[in-house]
Length: 247
Image (cartoon, rainbow, N blue to C red; front, side, top):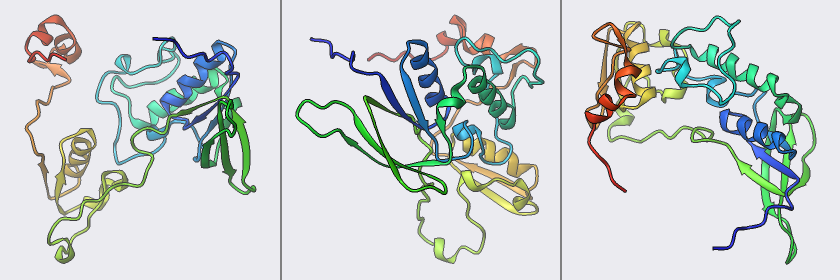
């Protein structure tokens, strides 16, 4: 199969300044390709910029870091960093590699469309920075780094929701755990945000119940209260306890 030629690429548009978009920009700069990052918020970081109550890493920080940029030794980081600490680490990465210089913050992408013409390659990006008129720029390549959580939250409509007298929140809008104070809380789901929300609600609420479709295997941070969990799970022994999957 013939490889596609990208030698024409000299300028790239990146949509989103989360961890993916920042790494794309850094790698492009390393090979001499100019780029512009469009970010609708006022700061880099993506989901780590702001999120639900008490959000943070569920793994040790050494397992969540940029290649070539370990957590700075002069920082005060917890072993399992809070969301604010992760955000600060991401900001320091952007500063270290001068990524802020190519960011258009508070800038929404309104439309992207292929360049016109039979032999044209690239994209036209129509965008608007807050307080300014819309503008259009052309690029040789486009990277969508908006992630999974950039759109409006999806709220399933369950039968009987119209007669429910309590408050219903999406996980991303549960930003203050004190709203659960004295209440009986039910969290629907079994992913990271569901577990985090249930733990946060349990600290304030009268009771908290977690409902999930399938059972999960929660792993303690320390196996037998002694061994860091990654030594057991991210090892040959740990892998031997998991079912085999073949493509």
